[in-house]
Image (tube, rainbow, N blue to C red; front, top):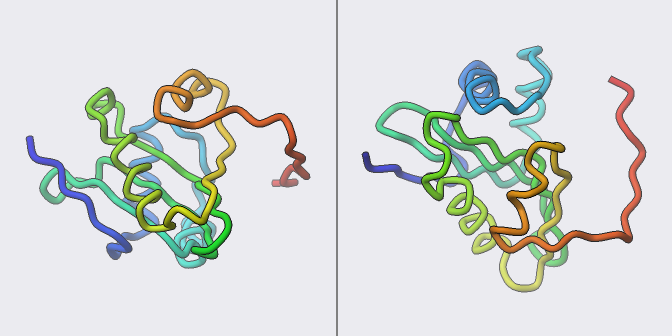
Length: 131
């Protein structure tokens, strides 16, 4: 199996919704909302096994100070093969050394992120979405 990585590849809401389901990541299912999420992200790295989308890192960044990694999803059948870590590495390389990389984790993934270089922060605040 040879995984290829692409920056800002054209992907549709249906493919992303299916990946979210296969990865176990809970995200909106409404196609129009997913399309907005894709259209307004300014950094998307994808992982492919041939024509099959198997991983996604979706981020919002200014490329100079900060980057919010809003989605990191890897198909469960492809997990534990460094795909998630490689997606993070591609995001880190794209944003450069001047930007911090920040994310919010689902409870099930809290143990994963320290293994790939993230540090837990205690100085954050959130206003949660209403929908």
